[in-house]
Image (cartoon, rainbow, N blue to C red; front, side, top):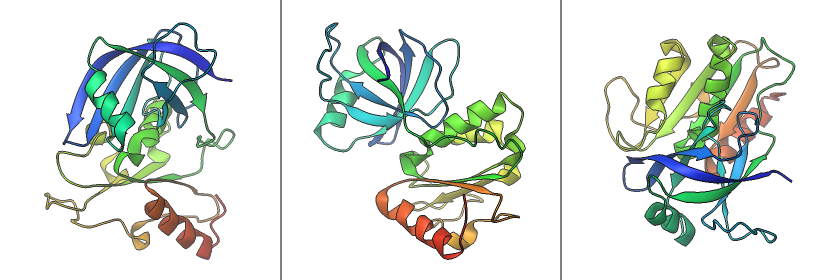
Length: 223
């Protein structure tokens, strides 16, 4: 069923014209696994016997005792436009969480984890980074992240703070940047030592995920 909670907006950070990063404080703070998603509605009525119009967003942070969660939202359609217009610091919304099975390996604590993200698809990967930083196992996490330009790369500062530099692979598609390839990620960029033991996570738009999934199927990747 999920937990239904009011949430207060703590901060809003702009990443270009189309992307916003929201930090919310949950009024009901229950544990969730990194990689989960939530449903957000702008309705704040106490009686939610019928769940109102809402949108799904990956949670871009790990569980913490303070009840703070991060969302990275791209404006796409009328409802996200409303979110951009109405959710300001101090305002409230309602969320239902947590859902999904895009989760870190539960039993395997040793294998390499390779995350491939495009745009706002970096959101659940940021949650992975925070959760793994709590267990001291970040050296096995490798991130390949493609963004459009310098104004639209949410999470880069956090990734650089948490991960070893050799585990980070950035790509910028619409702007030349120092020491960052000016192109999309291609399948040949992905490096791994053992195909059968490495876990691959892919998050982006439909064409992005389809491209990588099909290529991993061709080489018979198991995870």
